[in-house]
Length: 381
Image (cartoon, rainbow, N blue to C red; front, side):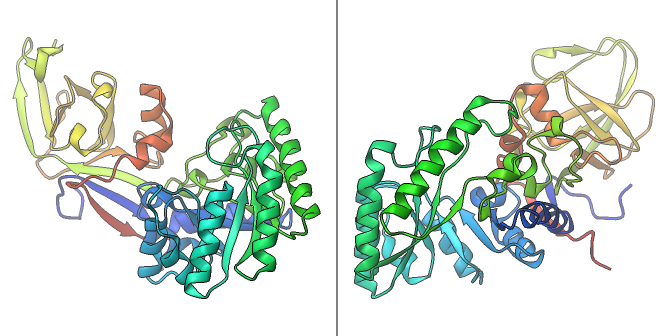
């Protein structure tokens, strides 16, 4: 039994692992002369944005990135003073509070640029702006045919004293597919856009590399890299080798009830599993409302009492059942649903592979109202 008190559903977040991963990634960046922006959007990929931001800065990250203004302002309210970029807006978003709080903003269109400049003029501040070019992902970012007008307007606004163009940036579509031809094609388009910005009189830095490119494409590091998923210890390019990343999230619960059933008894809704042997069952009080995909029914296991054990029957909204065979387990015993894998427990990457998704989706979907979050530090003395 664990020395810790029993818990229903808990995410154990290891800030020591976060710091370790940031140091690994920053070392890759420094080898190319680049600085490091750690991405903490989506509440730090489910790990806690403020927790991750603090650990990343302690480990030497130069700046932070989030998607929305609200995410950025929450970090400011939490005491984060480091440079901070956000890039995705709704139509009604107000740029003025972000400018007032020294939050750097991305512009992908003339309209957004003009709104940012107006907010800066209103607040009597100079807004720091990153101009985003669409190089082939075809999501956010300025289309190439509209780029010359955007950089000309940006140069004028900079000359008028309303904003400073900090960077030209873009995002890669297939960096985790190492031989994909789109990577070099996007790099070429990015270079052209940067040169157009320079020709307009701007002197921005460049940033393009996400986690996969940080680890595999030093030629695309430029001035700044933007690791996201790798910060959390989940490798976007495991086929490239061991990058010594440490997963930071462990999902755990405790045994709520044990019982023994006879051969021939069936378990859970639909009775999809029937015991062909007498078995000790352990009831675990987590389910799909807590982030366990129902699609893992019949193909998942947990780490319990020193070994991996199969989950039998369907995953329910609030609970699942583990077949312990003839082994005796006790109420309150710790159950690891996934973790780093060091002890042989399942991993978030394994869950993703089993249900045909990516580990990003697993970890970002884990923090739910009934799930607590406990921060630990494996680097602490």
